[in-house]
Length: 502
Image (tube, rainbow, N blue to C red; front, side, top):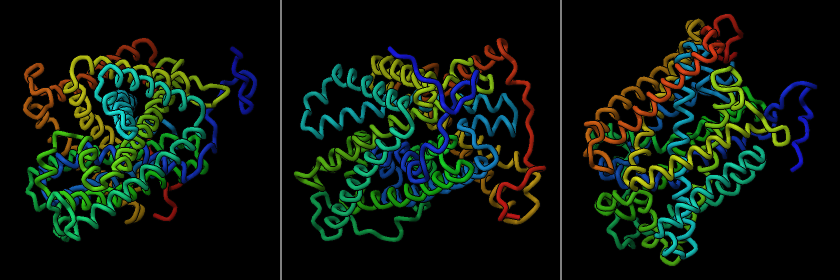
């Protein structure tokens, strides 16, 4: 095998770096959308969301958008002063110190590890169903092997180059979006005209009221909504490889949340108009399979269109979820927060090859191990994601206000946009985090239905991942303390992050 050629941008004796300007705004936007996996996310939550909130499901998705937009704004603001591919890890380190920064980076990395295999599994199953190979889709051994193969294939594509990843995502997001829009249009038309065999409902403005279902239902629905929106920050993780890195990635993150809002509201209204609340609630346990059931009812012989949308969404998200975890590993290694090997960049492909392969392999091992325990244990591990997501999103919002604290009194817009907004978003997420811990402590709220260490399995997995991170952090600090010598600072003496906010 021929060795990689030297990095033409590196000076003699220097290591290769990520390729600057590899992608533009549209590519970053697509990657942010693909990482969220709209079709998969909607399929996974819509039944449970309707069971909790009834016709107010669209309103809850609208309410869930608020903290996401506020935190996306915090990402954009922080990216302007520190366009680092480690995002939360780097920003929290600068604002709040290395201990908080390290555990924030760990949370980002582990969300990818926990969910990558499950995304690939859905991609495999729905691809087989789209091709009419239902018998293979129900064969556990075949699906397991194909899933691991898909994870490793997507990992390899991530290593080959960011440009290739972006081109693949452009194709996948186009197929996914077109399929979702066709499905939504047909469902709304048949529901409104009374052509639905499931007894649809007439849409009303009250559907957009998130408070109509009551406080308890709203809090549970918001937790599902946060999971549905999660992933848009992948665009910011590619900031060092994006043209106009200080602004382009942040704008892509904000725009992606807006696109997701429109998509989610359209599809949620469509399925309610076509299927009503009773059908969706009765099939809430079907998870992502709910779209497989609805596709036949809505599209008839064209049901493969919806199956294809979920398949492409899951495959696209399998790849894009690898990106933030691998870039965070690279950033941590560059700051000596992880072994230097994780910071290696391929001279040929200009991607963090070592950290990327580590993410793909560990995610595969985790998926196989948990799948062999039981399918319910796998679902519980995905549920545990809500803890880590709320934690590092909230941490980023707090870091934004802390880092820019000396700028907050310079103008009213600065006070609101880089102080109050991120803190409100963080506060909402902390509230959801507390609610999530409370709910996940009850074994009855788990798929397994059995207590682990006296509480629900998702809580054990979430807290266990967090504690493992603390142990590894202490161990690495004992071996190399250079990263922990960093001191937090502020942006008070710099040019304001938004000149127009002065």
